[in-house]
Length: 140
Ligand code: HEM
Image (cartoon, rainbow, N blue to C red; front, side, top):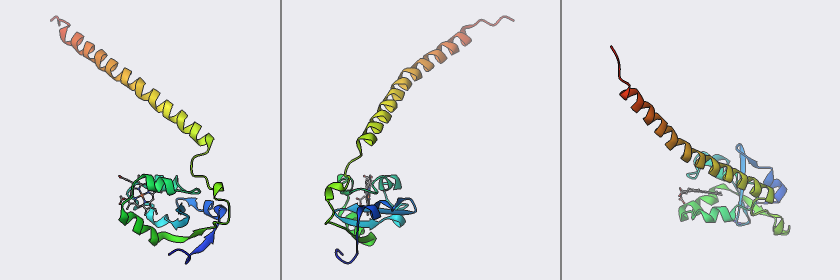
């Protein structure tokens, strides 16, 4: 497998980061997973968010089965140019992305807390309403 494909660089890799043309870099090898997006058991979003960077960590973190690792060869395109500084390859999100993710997470937590407060309150108000409605004496 290795050595039979093209030698690609990072800017080529980042040009294939869409739903219609999706390449992944895992352990120095580039894979075209465009056709696999719809079939990936973990969903297409995780694959799309792993484009344009070294996705080795994300791939390993999931604990993919050995059959998933064997599948990789089906999608092999080539190797990344190792003469280019590998430090250039972003393995993690940029500080801006991290900051934005944290903002989103704290907003989500805030929403959850709001719902945790509002839902019991709503049930209480409804229960009071029903009780009041049932107890109101009806005059003929
Ligand atoms: C060409 C690359 C990939 C292939 C061939 C592949 C294949 C698979 C397969 C076969 C499964 C089913 C479970 C298993 O057999 O391990 C799976 C699950 C999954 N994959 Fe991938 N995968 C790839 C890349 C990735 C990447 C880069 C990510 C993360 C960014 C990812 C995230 C997941 C997740 C979250 C699941 C679901 C795990 C679960 O439900 O427990 N995969 N993948």
